[in-house]
Length: 116
Image (cartoon, rainbow, N blue to C red; front, side):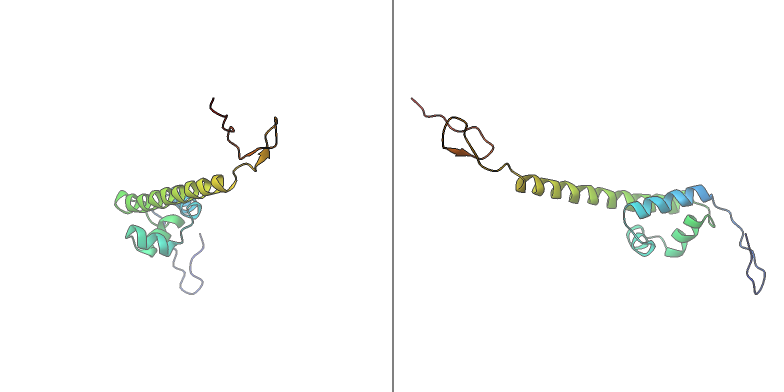
């Protein structure tokens, strides 16, 4: 890791870059910016960024609320997708087609037979 070109300071990395990279992928997958995740989790943006870069240890006290916020966001996304799919399936009902035996039309349901 290179240090600062002006003063030569080299930041010490105490974190696990793999954990940070995984958290970043999760955050991006649920469509949150660092600022949005900060607001949802209550963790400072600087903490989230440092963990993602592997510059800060991913302590449970910081990671648990971050992961919980991402889970809530993922659940909200699933609900939105489910609602959208429900609406789409209602719009995609079969077109009315002629009944094979005659001229009557029916829309994807069995035609009612006359009661004798």
